[in-house]
Image 1 (cartoon, rainbow over the protein chains, first blue to last red):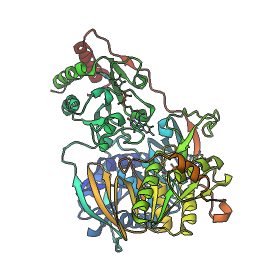
Image 2 (image 1 turned 45 degrees about the vertical axis):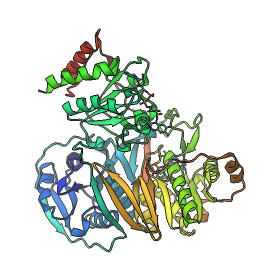
Image 3 (image 1 turned 60 degrees about the vertical axis):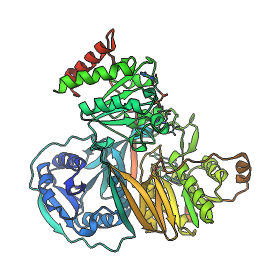
Image 4 (image 1 turned 180 degrees about the horizontal axis):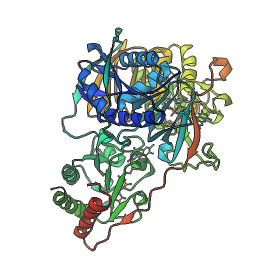
Length: 323
Length: 256
Ligand SMILES: Cc1cc2nc3c(=O)[nH]c(=O)nc-3n(C[C@H](O)[C@H](O)[C@H](O)COP(=O)(O)OP(=O)(O)OC[C@H]3O[C@@H](n4cnc5c(N)ncnc54)[C@H](O)[C@@H]3O)c2cc1C
Ligand SMILES: Cc1cc2nc3c(=O)[nH]c(=O)nc-3n(C[C@H](O)[C@H](O)[C@H](O)COP(=O)(O)OP(=O)(O)OC[C@H]3O[C@@H](n4cnc5c(N)ncnc54)[C@H](O)[C@@H]3O)c2cc1C
């Protein structure tokens, strides 16, 4: 009988990604309901040392697949190894991160195991021995409660939604031999973003600008506010399509889906496609001179005024608050 | 080149989505149906490849009778032919079932490259491309923003969190398209006229021989959790509003 909760940890450049700790904590909570074990899959090269940190966040046992051919991430190599470890250990539930890599990998692994997958979930629980995963559908206009009628039950969790809480367990390492066949795909180059900013999907604070910013240079005032709050700047599609911001900054239905603690929308009207990308943010602030703008229906705090006057003042206020 | 583009018909992004009273799904009555926006990028990229390298573009779609309109849209953009997999048995399909249905058809067609959207904007699963690649036992390149074709391989750009990957893959492979890849064309009037005569093969589940039981089931559809009503921050001057907002964020929301 399939038993226990397994997570598929994600690391890059020898460091665990934050989502891995969110997965560990969430798995711990689920497993504690049934008194089961939490295990983790950790793949890469020279990464055994990371197992201890997974242990700190609630993982009992870590399956480490160490092979130079697993670095950098290539889908088919990771999918083969991940599916094999899952098959050999027969967990009831498997959790992935709904990161770019996690989404790429989870769907391939689910297909290999001929099971179902609930993507980008914002809640998971165990009810009557079965996983129930809640996920936004139709761009968050409704939510579906998904059950998987096959084994294992797989879900991927939206980054930044589930808390990562320490809960020390053994994190005992089991080494797994991972054979990697010749791959048809090859990573030629990894071009790192050198801005030093956290990606929007992982940011705690996002300051976003829209058409109301008037031009690319005006985003400087958002950069300044974001710097003070240790946040990242995002944009509406209007700002991206105008060429003011790069595509990677776009939040929304055809951009990124984000869940920061604080989302500050400046000069963004709140079109339904924009709301689709940010309505799972914990606290939403809207700064817009039009009191009728739809963004105010989603905002926890609204400021009806000229953003060019409010934002610099807010930056000054925040500077004092965080000092 | 033999190019395949998978397209799904989805509710227009502006559509009001109402959950049925019994939680069994959504009310379909008032919805305007369109091609999934990400699939427009796939069709466009397929047409660009064809224009440069010759070959033909086949559209494959699983969906009810109304989905034929979306196939015709792709044909009007310039695709050559279509396969419409239509059967009420797919009504409660999941990504796994859809991917296997697409694979069953694509296996019978010559294929060098297969385009999907990176996700469908209704179910937002983002699974079909990868599952299809597995079913065809070919590599997958998901969330692609740039593609260069070089004979027996392709080179793509994939943005990931905080970096961009440049990846090379041997064909055949599945590519899932992200915004930024290209600017989809509109169907021209002559294109629309021509599309009416282009061949579309309609097949049911039995004809393609796939199982239709979903592995993932939507047990219940619920409206989004209600957000408590927001506050408009008071003050006479921008400076006062900023100060009050700062205070609220600090003391009430504990967000800074
Ligand atoms: C298929 C599809 C997909 C889409 N995907 C996305 C997506 O992923 N993300 C996205 O964002 N959009 C998306 N859109 C576009 C969306 O419909 C809107 O057009 C877009 O979000 C509008 O951007 P905006 O709010 O910046 O601009 P506008 O709607 O023009 O709003 C500008 C706002 O700025 C305010 N303003 C102007 N000057 C000031 C000032 N000085 N001070 C304060 N406020 C000011 C105005 O009052 C106004 O509310 C999509 C559309 C379609 C059809
Ligand atoms: C409650 C419920 C009821 C449903 N009822 C129906 C129904 O009656 N009829 C129906 O057809 N579907 C129905 N579906 C949708 C079907 O289950 C989805 O197509 C499937 O889950 C795939 O997920 P996705 O659409 O999010 O695809 P994603 O994985 O997000 O899609 C990625 C890409 O895969 C390709 N793709 C996806 N689906 C198709 C398709 N159907 N044809 C061609 N290419 C595709 C597209 O290129 C798309 O951009 C229903 C889903 C739910 C949850």
